[in-house]
Length: 601
Figure 1 (cartoon, rainbow, N blue to C red):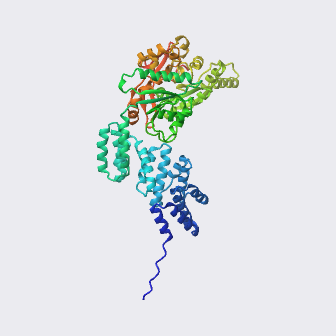
Figure 2: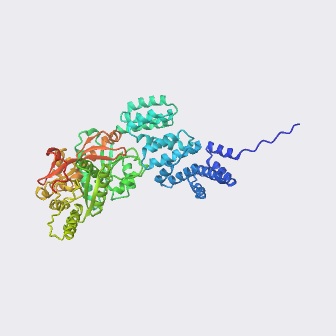
Figure 3: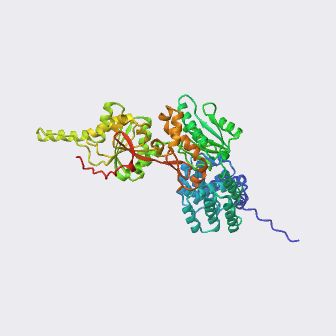
């Protein structure tokens, strides 16, 4: 009888690879780690990197980090090590660092599995930091490579968030340029949703056609939720929870917003679909408790809160089951979830519009801001906005709020003291009794001003005294007290500022008269907040449309309303100029010619 040769022992690497392919990540990780102990040099490094990646896939990040610690002496030259490190950074919460590391890698040497991990890591990090373009590119490409069954649902949701955040023109271009049907399918579904989400019947027909074009596509599981979202967008909420801060310091502001909101509610002619409104005080309980209570009370939508820290808390709540129109704006990383909108009367938004408006009159600016927390906030906003429009800040001066502080700041901004110093030096050099008149700097074309009315009443006479009376001055709405005071505001003549049309009879004067009749004197001192409350109610039916259609504009009493892809509302301000102490709309005045910087010198 012939002897049978023993079967060859299984290749340990082949077994490890088989476990990885089968999704047995913990077993694969242990096998790669064992292989690494018997290997040396580059081979050992790469096996430990594979073990770390597999441990991460199994959810054992502590063991993975321990292996990466053993690789600290290696450089990022091994792309698998760098990929694992990027994934570790992402898990630790440092998405920005993960995106930088993963984005800088040469992925050519990676295996198909490592390619997939890299794409998922880069995409998730970019999505967290709000870079939708990079996130969409990476996450769509991740589907070319092996995807763990346990990660497919999360990856599909993340890919869709990134794709849907892209503008329509980019979706169209990417669909046309896609090299594979699986990639084109993501962008085509994005286009389909963008064009039909507000019409459920059209969306149902369009998604049926999409499914026939891309059978078995990983995005197919999203179609049902898209149709559900479309139906929800077409229905006004039946019950609204209005969350406002009725604690001592913020009570007057909260009351004005509440009364404006309810004024719009009472004036809503669509009585059949007018929602029920219940008001909650954020001073009474923790925000999470209030939200739970509102939901238990039947609220389908939340308007508020007003405090910025509470808006940030609510934005971070990924389990929130209702839509939200927050009454402040937080600048947070990542893409805001669908159904979360932000609307605020922010200085940053106004500063950006002032910069765009002022840029028509010049590019070289002087910046005057108060020496205060508010002044620092607006000063930074001005600087960023002015840079964004291509302008140059020649000098920023922070003024202290006293008589000498105003004069000193103007002299410094206009370089008057430098002019005086040059004259003194020349007099001493020539030893002659030269006549001297202060001369302001000749390179500045305009002034960006951060000031309340009292500040501006001190600064403007100083500017005229030192020869800058003809220089254009631009400011935010804070420069106007909100009520007509020609005698007190005559010193503000020449200042151009942006404000809401509600204050000047240019938007819904009938409702303004109602507010003034019922809520004096608060209607005068808190006029902007009443208007804010009115628009917060009236914009509710348009929120989804505004986010989907950035070109859409809704007229409001606070300004013409638009929304960006992040769900943040923006107002188009009305432009005014003080003439005889009274704000006049710039469109009603004679145009001002471009400023000649050498005039009046």
